[in-house]
Image (cartoon, rainbow, N blue to C red; front, top):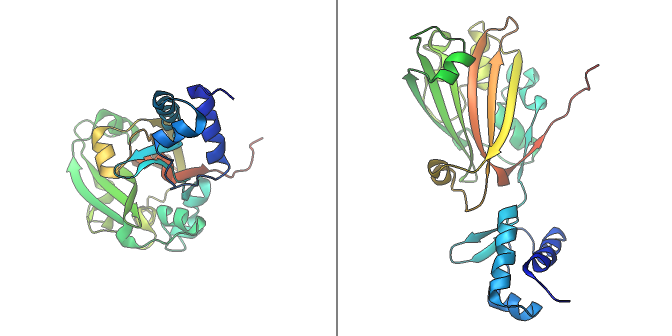
Length: 255
Protein backbone atom coordinates (compact mmCIF):
# COMPACT_ATOMS: atom_id res chain seq x y z
CA UNK A 1 0.00 0.00 0.00
CA UNK A 2 1.23 3.48 -0.89
CA UNK A 3 0.90 5.82 2.06
CA UNK A 4 0.16 9.51 1.88
CA UNK A 5 0.00 11.42 5.16
CA UNK A 6 -3.76 10.88 5.49
CA UNK A 7 -3.45 7.13 4.94
CA UNK A 8 -0.57 6.93 7.41
CA UNK A 9 -2.56 8.92 9.96
CA UNK A 10 -5.49 6.51 9.49
CA UNK A 11 -3.18 3.53 10.08
CA UNK A 12 -1.69 5.04 13.25
CA UNK A 13 -5.15 6.13 14.44
CA UNK A 14 -6.46 2.58 14.07
CA UNK A 15 -3.54 1.21 16.07
CA UNK A 16 -4.17 3.71 18.86
CA UNK A 17 -7.88 2.88 18.93
CA UNK A 18 -6.97 -0.82 19.27
CA UNK A 19 -4.69 -0.04 22.23
CA UNK A 20 -1.26 -0.56 20.69
CA UNK A 21 0.35 1.86 21.33
CA UNK A 22 -1.56 2.34 24.57
CA UNK A 23 -2.33 5.61 26.37
CA UNK A 24 0.91 6.96 27.80
CA UNK A 25 3.07 5.10 25.28
CA UNK A 26 5.45 6.95 22.96
CA UNK A 27 5.15 6.60 19.19
CA UNK A 28 8.22 5.27 17.36
CA UNK A 29 10.67 7.90 16.15
CA UNK A 30 9.56 9.63 12.97
CA UNK A 31 12.59 8.26 11.10
CA UNK A 32 11.62 4.73 12.18
CA UNK A 33 8.02 5.24 11.07
CA UNK A 34 9.21 6.57 7.73
CA UNK A 35 11.34 3.45 7.19
CA UNK A 36 8.56 1.12 8.36
CA UNK A 37 5.94 2.53 5.99
CA UNK A 38 8.20 3.44 3.09
CA UNK A 39 7.57 7.18 3.20
CA UNK A 40 9.66 10.26 3.83
CA UNK A 41 9.89 11.98 7.19
CA UNK A 42 7.83 14.91 5.88
CA UNK A 43 4.87 12.56 5.34
CA UNK A 44 5.26 11.15 8.85
CA UNK A 45 5.45 14.65 10.31
CA UNK A 46 2.20 15.63 8.55
CA UNK A 47 0.44 12.44 9.71
CA UNK A 48 1.50 12.98 13.33
CA UNK A 49 0.42 16.63 13.14
CA UNK A 50 -3.03 15.46 12.05
CA UNK A 51 -3.25 13.11 15.04
CA UNK A 52 -2.15 15.94 17.33
CA UNK A 53 -4.92 18.16 15.93
CA UNK A 54 -7.41 15.38 16.67
CA UNK A 55 -6.19 15.19 20.26
CA UNK A 56 -4.96 11.60 20.03
CA UNK A 57 -1.29 12.33 20.65
CA UNK A 58 0.74 15.15 22.11
CA UNK A 59 4.44 16.09 22.00
CA UNK A 60 6.19 15.72 25.34
CA UNK A 61 9.61 17.25 25.89
CA UNK A 62 12.42 14.70 26.08
CA UNK A 63 10.00 11.84 25.36
CA UNK A 64 8.65 12.37 21.87
CA UNK A 65 5.06 12.01 20.71
CA UNK A 66 2.91 10.37 23.38
CA UNK A 67 -0.53 8.81 23.06
CA UNK A 68 -2.87 10.79 25.25
CA UNK A 69 -4.37 9.21 28.31
CA UNK A 70 -8.09 8.57 28.13
CA UNK A 71 -10.18 10.68 30.51
CA UNK A 72 -9.46 9.46 34.03
CA UNK A 73 -12.54 10.89 35.63
CA UNK A 74 -16.29 10.97 35.09
CA UNK A 75 -17.70 14.41 35.64
CA UNK A 76 -21.20 13.57 36.83
CA UNK A 77 -24.26 15.54 35.82
CA UNK A 78 -27.32 15.84 38.04
CA UNK A 79 -26.08 13.10 40.39
CA UNK A 80 -23.16 15.21 41.64
CA UNK A 81 -25.64 17.73 43.09
CA UNK A 82 -27.77 15.18 44.95
CA UNK A 83 -28.86 16.64 48.28
CA UNK A 84 -28.18 13.28 49.91
CA UNK A 85 -24.48 13.99 49.31
CA UNK A 86 -24.09 17.55 50.63
CA UNK A 87 -27.21 18.29 52.70
CA UNK A 88 -27.42 14.98 54.53
CA UNK A 89 -23.81 13.89 54.04
CA UNK A 90 -20.43 15.53 53.60
CA UNK A 91 -19.57 14.80 49.96
CA UNK A 92 -18.91 17.91 47.88
CA UNK A 93 -19.37 17.88 44.11
CA UNK A 94 -15.77 17.30 43.00
CA UNK A 95 -15.48 14.47 45.53
CA UNK A 96 -18.64 12.89 44.09
CA UNK A 97 -16.90 12.78 40.71
CA UNK A 98 -13.84 11.12 42.25
CA UNK A 99 -15.90 8.52 44.10
CA UNK A 100 -17.87 7.68 40.95
CA UNK A 101 -14.56 7.22 39.12
CA UNK A 102 -13.01 5.06 41.87
CA UNK A 103 -10.35 7.70 42.45
CA UNK A 104 -9.07 9.04 45.77
CA UNK A 105 -9.58 12.58 47.01
CA UNK A 106 -8.63 14.70 49.97
CA UNK A 107 -9.55 18.26 51.03
CA UNK A 108 -6.04 19.41 50.14
CA UNK A 109 -6.75 18.58 46.47
CA UNK A 110 -8.56 21.93 46.35
CA UNK A 111 -6.82 25.23 47.04
CA UNK A 112 -8.46 28.63 46.76
CA UNK A 113 -8.27 32.35 47.06
CA UNK A 114 -11.13 34.62 48.13
CA UNK A 115 -11.59 38.30 47.29
CA UNK A 116 -14.29 40.95 47.61
CA UNK A 117 -14.53 42.57 44.17
CA UNK A 118 -16.48 44.88 41.93
CA UNK A 119 -17.96 42.13 39.76
CA UNK A 120 -17.87 42.06 35.95
CA UNK A 121 -21.06 42.74 34.01
CA UNK A 122 -21.80 39.04 33.43
CA UNK A 123 -21.77 38.35 37.17
CA UNK A 124 -23.95 41.39 37.87
CA UNK A 125 -26.53 40.02 35.42
CA UNK A 126 -26.43 36.40 36.62
CA UNK A 127 -26.62 37.28 40.34
CA UNK A 128 -29.08 40.12 39.67
CA UNK A 129 -26.94 42.57 41.63
CA UNK A 130 -27.83 46.20 42.16
CA UNK A 131 -25.60 48.92 40.72
CA UNK A 132 -22.45 49.23 42.83
CA UNK A 133 -23.13 46.01 44.77
CA UNK A 134 -19.98 44.00 45.45
CA UNK A 135 -19.48 40.24 45.30
CA UNK A 136 -17.15 37.65 46.74
CA UNK A 137 -15.15 35.63 44.23
CA UNK A 138 -13.84 32.24 45.35
CA UNK A 139 -11.26 30.83 42.94
CA UNK A 140 -10.34 27.14 43.29
CA UNK A 141 -7.62 25.04 41.70
CA UNK A 142 -8.31 21.30 41.92
CA UNK A 143 -5.67 18.60 41.49
CA UNK A 144 -5.61 14.82 41.19
CA UNK A 145 -2.40 13.16 42.42
CA UNK A 146 -0.65 16.53 42.13
CA UNK A 147 -1.82 17.13 38.55
CA UNK A 148 -4.19 20.09 37.97
CA UNK A 149 -7.52 18.99 36.51
CA UNK A 150 -9.62 22.15 36.56
CA UNK A 151 -10.33 25.52 38.06
CA UNK A 152 -13.66 26.73 39.40
CA UNK A 153 -14.37 30.38 40.07
CA UNK A 154 -17.57 31.13 42.00
CA UNK A 155 -19.21 34.49 42.64
CA UNK A 156 -21.58 35.15 45.53
CA UNK A 157 -23.54 38.15 46.77
CA UNK A 158 -21.63 39.80 49.59
CA UNK A 159 -24.75 39.90 51.77
CA UNK A 160 -25.36 36.17 51.25
CA UNK A 161 -21.97 34.87 52.38
CA UNK A 162 -20.34 37.55 54.53
CA UNK A 163 -18.78 35.91 57.62
CA UNK A 164 -19.38 32.34 56.42
CA UNK A 165 -16.83 29.60 55.57
CA UNK A 166 -17.28 30.51 51.90
CA UNK A 167 -15.04 33.53 52.43
CA UNK A 168 -12.35 31.50 54.22
CA UNK A 169 -9.38 30.91 51.86
CA UNK A 170 -8.21 27.79 53.72
CA UNK A 171 -7.60 24.82 51.37
CA UNK A 172 -10.42 22.34 50.89
CA UNK A 173 -14.20 22.53 50.77
CA UNK A 174 -16.04 25.14 52.84
CA UNK A 175 -16.81 22.75 55.65
CA UNK A 176 -18.98 19.64 55.79
CA UNK A 177 -21.12 19.49 52.66
CA UNK A 178 -19.22 22.34 51.02
CA UNK A 179 -20.63 25.61 49.73
CA UNK A 180 -24.16 24.34 49.15
CA UNK A 181 -24.42 23.32 52.80
CA UNK A 182 -23.15 26.76 53.86
CA UNK A 183 -25.79 28.48 51.72
CA UNK A 184 -28.48 26.23 53.19
CA UNK A 185 -27.51 27.29 56.71
CA UNK A 186 -27.94 30.89 55.52
CA UNK A 187 -31.53 30.12 54.55
CA UNK A 188 -30.55 29.97 50.87
CA UNK A 189 -30.84 26.28 50.05
CA UNK A 190 -29.77 25.56 46.46
CA UNK A 191 -32.62 24.09 44.46
CA UNK A 192 -32.08 24.74 40.74
CA UNK A 193 -28.87 24.49 38.71
CA UNK A 194 -28.41 25.76 35.16
CA UNK A 195 -25.24 24.57 33.40
CA UNK A 196 -23.87 25.64 30.04
CA UNK A 197 -20.94 23.73 28.52
CA UNK A 198 -18.67 24.82 25.69
CA UNK A 199 -15.11 24.23 24.53
CA UNK A 200 -12.19 26.29 23.27
CA UNK A 201 -8.42 26.36 23.29
CA UNK A 202 -6.85 27.52 26.56
CA UNK A 203 -5.42 30.95 27.20
CA UNK A 204 -1.69 31.21 28.04
CA UNK A 205 -2.53 31.66 31.74
CA UNK A 206 -4.79 28.58 31.71
CA UNK A 207 -2.11 26.57 29.91
CA UNK A 208 0.37 27.45 32.64
CA UNK A 209 -1.95 27.02 35.63
CA UNK A 210 -3.42 23.70 34.47
CA UNK A 211 -0.16 22.42 32.92
CA UNK A 212 -1.90 21.74 29.61
CA UNK A 213 0.16 20.15 26.80
CA UNK A 214 0.15 21.64 23.32
CA UNK A 215 -3.03 21.08 21.35
CA UNK A 216 -5.32 20.14 24.25
CA UNK A 217 -8.57 22.11 24.52
CA UNK A 218 -10.48 23.01 27.65
CA UNK A 219 -14.13 22.46 28.52
CA UNK A 220 -15.85 25.52 29.95
CA UNK A 221 -18.68 25.08 32.44
CA UNK A 222 -20.88 28.01 33.42
CA UNK A 223 -23.22 27.36 36.34
CA UNK A 224 -25.96 29.44 37.91
CA UNK A 225 -27.54 28.18 41.15
CA UNK A 226 -30.86 29.44 42.50
CA UNK A 227 -33.09 28.77 45.48
CA UNK A 228 -36.62 27.41 45.10
CA UNK A 229 -37.80 31.02 45.17
CA UNK A 230 -35.56 31.91 42.21
CA UNK A 231 -32.94 33.83 44.21
CA UNK A 232 -29.53 33.41 42.48
CA UNK A 233 -26.92 32.35 45.05
CA UNK A 234 -23.93 31.42 42.89
CA UNK A 235 -22.53 32.03 39.43
CA UNK A 236 -19.50 29.88 38.63
CA UNK A 237 -17.14 29.33 35.72
CA UNK A 238 -15.08 26.14 35.53
CA UNK A 239 -12.17 25.53 33.17
CA UNK A 240 -11.52 21.79 32.76
CA UNK A 241 -8.69 20.01 30.97
CA UNK A 242 -10.45 18.06 28.23
CA UNK A 243 -8.20 15.02 28.63
CA UNK A 244 -9.09 14.60 32.31
CA UNK A 245 -12.86 14.26 32.15
CA UNK A 246 -15.69 12.47 30.43
CA UNK A 247 -19.05 14.15 31.05
CA UNK A 248 -21.87 11.87 32.15
CA UNK A 249 -25.56 12.73 32.45
CA UNK A 250 -28.37 10.48 33.60
CA UNK A 251 -31.89 11.90 33.74
CA UNK A 252 -35.53 11.08 33.24
CA UNK A 253 -36.91 12.23 29.90
CA UNK A 254 -39.41 15.05 30.35
CA UNK A 255 -42.93 14.63 28.99
